[in-house]
Length: 109
Length: 112
Picture 1 (cartoon, chains in turn green, brown):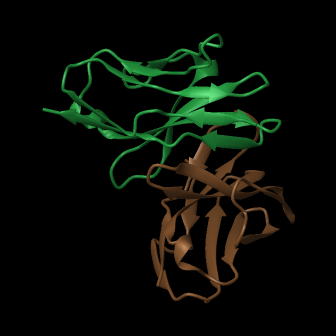
Picture 2 (tube, each protein chain N blue to C red):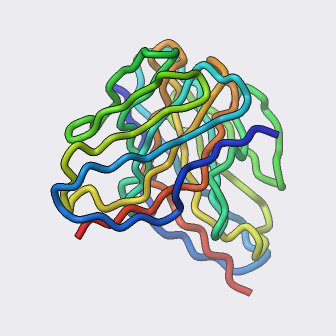
């Protein structure tokens, strides 16, 4: 069965510090992974997907199949990055997304 | 811009009441989803639908049912609400495959 694990419920860093939000998955098929973000009082929205290999708002994420991880990174955190972040795995012939438990990122001034 | 709307932002119901949560999307997406969002548990899929009148159970379907009579509308039904169904409910829609999934604003349901 598929599973997504985000080991940290809360991550607190100072502005300008590097950030890494961890995501590990278990899935027998070929994984397609996403990061979604929810800012305060806003709806959940897509941040990035691994197939795009893009950087959004300075964030990147690399799929590491050997370690079954898809960690989200940013070299210099900004206060506006404070939000709830969810890692998600697409499965069931591309029909279903399974989400991790989420990590709340707090960037302090 | 894709719009996913939910009928209520806040709802308060009593134990045993029948509750309807409505979701409408305006982008002709085949797939629609209902999740509940709880602190520490993330989003858990309740049900999803890949076409009109078609539905599949997600990870936590117990105590819920759904209805999809029209492509743009997906309803979540709590036949007899219980206090452990107090939660934030999120609706989402997606075209197909690895396309972006778009979420509604959520309905915070409190069952007393």
